[in-house]
Length: 270
Image 1 (tube, rainbow, N blue to C red):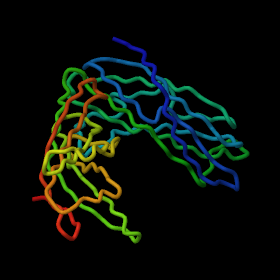
Image 2 (image 1 turned 90 degrees about the vertical axis):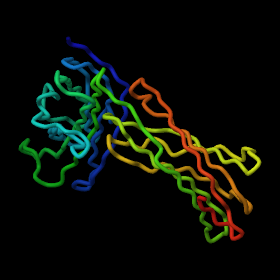
Image 3 (image 1 turned 60 degrees about the vertical axis):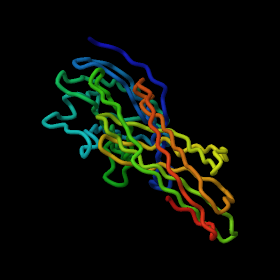
Image 4 (image 1 turned 135 degrees about the horizontal axis):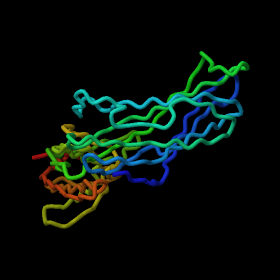
């Protein structure tokens, strides 16, 4: 079954200096994320723009990506990713639309990921690509195999620390180590709550979000509290994360730990 997909374009910019002129290429989308069932064939569009005042030669070079996390076996990139054109020229400021075809194998589970590289070089006066400086940038394509995904994560541990800069201002940090136990990538987002010994909530902090966790990876996500000013005593840190939203399967995980602040102001887990 053939489907046509339209996506919001996220722009990636890259620039090099070539011959005294700004040499830049714009591509979109920077990140493609889609769920397709086994055996599905789907079409989508990529856009490439030459932002320079010189003609450019573009080469499209897709690659299987994150090979340390995904077992591609004998599956080559052209077995599941196909473009209508792989090499072309662009006039100054010209935009070209490329047709991408995704061919999902019937026997693959979890997820496939490709890096779509675009390599550009300036055209010489005789119309040939220059052998000099080249710009290479890319966008990432994530294809979750619908019905085979395992979306599972766990907060393995919590760490607390505080630092004092030259102005004696305190930076209190809480880190949560998140393990991706599934077979697809996740981008956890979460919150940290700090309570005192009496159970009073002192603050709720947003954790840094957006960083990718591949299958089998354990990534540390942090939250910071400026000028916390915690007095000596016992406190509780509670971390809750949400993940899987990009796969339409939102799940949560939570963990809490007791920590102490000493008379010297230093924080440590009990």
